[in-house]
Image (cartoon, rainbow, N blue to C red):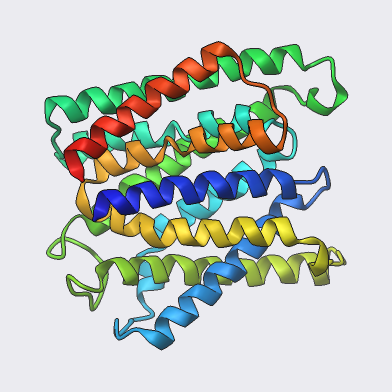
Length: 303
């Protein structure tokens, strides 16, 4: 079941990336508006879960889970900033190398182990994502003459920062969800651990969204045109779906799940090719095939 959740997360977040890019605008607070809307949608989901489930939620878990929530929210906001200037097919592979970094952290600090086939599969996925980043960076270099992409070194650092911070969040998440005996979360059982973790994250995101709204509307006097936020709301819905299945994915093998989910950049790249008309080379198709082989190997072992 956890590997099915892994694949659902992979697809949902890949689709979300497409809508994030479509909703990204070259305006000063575009990234904050996206973060705000995602926070409101996730917060709504958290409230529904509190009202419809019997998880017996302890609100102190918002503070207990804060290190994980903060890493995720910060990395996502940084990613939204980069999407204003970078092609989706450039930023997504670099950002999602975080899964490979998280897998390495799980191996070193949580002592999670791999069989030979799983190790080969993760290597294929990780190498494939790295190669996509290299190929897409080469494409970016050809676009620097265009004013739209002449954004310098700082903008290209955004997906790299995302990768590092998100990897730390995933590693902490794997620790929190590794075992009912070792989790710092309060008042949880085997059946409620994942829901409590996800609800804590979504409530934190809701608090962040409210603070951003206050900042934009009352301090910066920005008008929020809600009718023009369809792409952001669509992205938020798919992001929330992926987040819901993500915690169940980590329940199994955090190392395998995080490395596999990192391949959602493949979905992002294919969708950007179809809907955003971003071009793919034969080398990129070959690398995508390499990553898919890795995912299929993991699927054969875990389904």
